[in-house]
Length: 490
Image 1 (cartoon, helix red, strand yellow):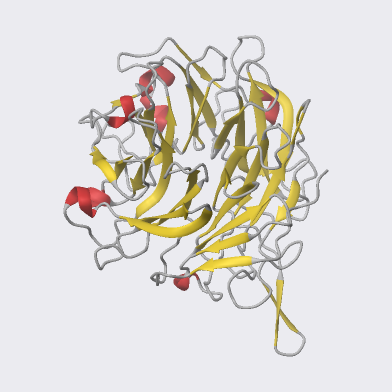
Image 2 (cartoon, rainbow, N blue to C red):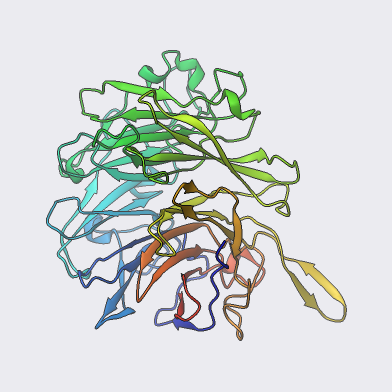
C-alpha cells in the first residue's frame, strides 16, 4: 500500500479578504476552464460577499503561463437576477461539464435561498477563457414544483437522454408537497434539465412510479444525493438517487434507500428503474443509507460501479460509525451488492459524517481508479493550553482513500489525510492546524494541476479559531508526490 501523501511546502493565495462565515470549500470542482491543459479549482463560498452583502460567491482559481492558481475570478448570480440578497447562499453546490458542446467546460452553481428562499440553479456558459461567459442562465423550476424546499440543490451532470448533449439533474431533498398524505413533510424531488439546461425548465421524475402510495414518501429526502454513471454498460448515462430517510421495504426500518433510473431518460418517461437491494446489509433505523453516492469504473467491466454511503451505520467491529457499500451490474440484472464494503477506521468517533463527500479518479497515476472519502465531522487531535491542560479538537475533519488495483478497488481504507498528518502541511502560522469545526473533507475533487495529480479538499470552517462563527474556509490542494508543492487556497 503506498504511503499517505505528504506535503512540505504550501503556497497561500490571500489576495481577497473573505467575510467571516464565508465557508469557502463548502463545494469544490476541478476542470480545465481556460483550455491550457492544467486543471483549475472551482470552489463555493456561500456565506461570502457579493455586491456588498453576504449573498455568496464562487471562486475560480485559474492557471496562467503554465502555473496553477495564478489568477482568481469571482462569480455571483447578480449578473442574472440584477440583485442579490443577504443569505442567498450562492455556491452551496457546484458542478462542471461542457453543456453546449463547444469544447469549453461550463459551470453549474446551486443557490440554496435565492428567489425568495425558494432556491435556484444557474448555468454559466464558458467562452473558453474561464474569465468571461458567453451566456449566463438561471435554470427555472418546473411549474409543478413550488420550491426546492430550502435545501442545498444537489447536482449531477450526464447524458441521461442519450442524445450526445449533457443534461443537468437537480435534487431538492426537502421539497414539500401539498398532497394531504404528505403535507409538510420533506418528501424530496428530482428534476432533469435536458440539453444543458438550454430550455430553462426541467422535467420532474414521476415519483409515483417509484412508490405509488404517497403516504410512504414522508421525510424520505429523495434527491439528497445523486450520481451519474453507465451502470448497465449500454453507453447511456443512468441516474442513481439517494433517499436516506426512506423506509426500506425489506425491513420496514427508516434506514434509507437508493433508486436507479436507467437511461435513456426523457421528458416522457423511461423504460426501467430499480430500488437497490439492501437485505444483505443489516441496516437499521437512522443509518441514512443513500446519504451520498459515487460512481466509477473500478473493476474495468462493461459498466460503472456505485458506492453508497450509510454514514450512521455501525462498522463491523462496532467501534465506530460509517460504511460505504459497492454495487455492480455484472449480468444485466441491475445493481447488486458485491460484498465489498468500506468501514470507517476503528478510532473514529461514535457519530461522524463518514462519506459526506466522495470523489473518484486516478490519483496516483497507476491506471487504476481510486476512491476518496471525506469525513468532515471526524474528531481528533489535541492542543496544549497553558501548562499540562489539553483540549480535544472536535469536528476537525479527515480524508480516507482506497486505491484501485488491477483486480478492483482495495476496500481497506487508508486514513491518510488530515491537516497535520503525517507531517504538518503548514509548519508555521495559524492556517492548516487542526481546529474545532474546520470541517476538513466537506468536499473533494481529483485533478491534475502541475506534473502530477492532486486532491482539492474543502475545509469550510478553516481559520475558525475554535469558533464556527469565524469560518472563512479554505481549499487544500494535496499532490500525489512529496516532491511537488501543495497549495492552500483562501
